[in-house]
Image 1: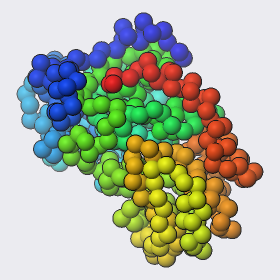
Image 2: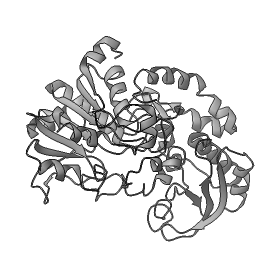
Image 3: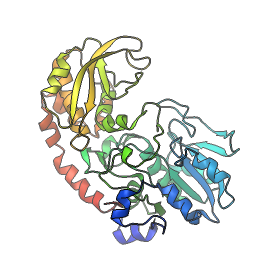
Amino acid sequence: MRLSRRAVLSATTVLPLTASTPADASVRRRAPVRTGFENLAATGYAALRGRRVGIVTNPTGVTRDLRHIVDVLHADRRVELTAVFGPEHGFRGTAQAGGSEGRYDDPATGLPVYDTYLTSGRALTEVFAASGVDTVVFDIQDVGARFYTYVWTLYDCMAAAQPLGLRFVVLDRPNPVSGRAAQGPVLHREFASFVGREPIAQAHGMTVAELARLFNGEFLAAPLALTTVRMSGWRRSDFFDTGALPWVPPSPNMPTPDTALVYAGTCLFEGTNLSEGRGTTRPFELLGAEGVDGRWAAAVGRLRLPGVHFREAYFAPTFSKFQGRTVGGVQLHVDDRAAYDPVRTGIGLLVTARRVWSGFAWRADHWIDRLTGSARVRTMIDAGAGTDEVVAAWRDELAAFSRVREQYLLYG
């Protein structure tokens, strides 16, 4: 449901920068990035005072000195922290892809930890009701891709909090691959799933607070009382390593910011019979299969995709596809982040893999359609379309999304 701009703004609060975090652009360029949590703490947790607070978070919810915010808030008498909600991989991050930690009491704090993974709608509303919280805080590091499930945990939690009249506070963190223009196809609603609930671009170019504003304004049945706590010192052109923040892997196969840089394109190989590099030290940067040889690296190299080169590579995954077997393929080497387009690169890799390797196949369940948001990429590649033709097919829908996106951005 498309809500009026006035209705959304009346339900949404953006916490201003504090006196200790000046907004002047010349100062911001010199200062390290301060997260939403840091700016909230600078106010003495004003937005949480007098509230019964529950936090949706995971191992990435840390301070600059690597203390978890749950531990910090639990020890602070100014905040009544009463519950924790864990997403995919769990609150403490022990579960692999497609798993979670279940319901338990956190040994470090004694707080009840509720499992939100694969829970949505009325069932998730009941979880919030049972927890007794009146304010839900969200603080998780995203990686900038539509099919990374934490953004849909955010969406599901917002939708579940709304019927109870709960306040919702989003503590912002950087988009690690910058907040440049959105890239890639936009989800078609008939292909909605937990790797894409609503029509946003494959590489959305937004922070989690900006996404929360978009969800509140465009997709929820009715707006909720949303507060977004901005970062300071972050600009849309910034990559993660420019912010002087520690990188904590947001999931087991996202070990470095380099992984995040390629993920929005190479995760598409989850929808094929090739390895996407799980079970190696460079997941999503290494791709391959048995029977693939140097012809693939040569073919994709001839596309002259901007900002990236490809090396013929051989590897043996320790788990997932081709476990313990040597496969051939490519390794991506991004040498110009500003020019690099992860989605175009992913399409180029799919197009050339299908052309040079006779064993290429899509997953039988057409998972590629969920990842790309429609059947179009799969059917066009099967019909022999080239990289430029596939990318051009989503131009109009991406332009329409970009116009909507612009209304909800918080940073220049």
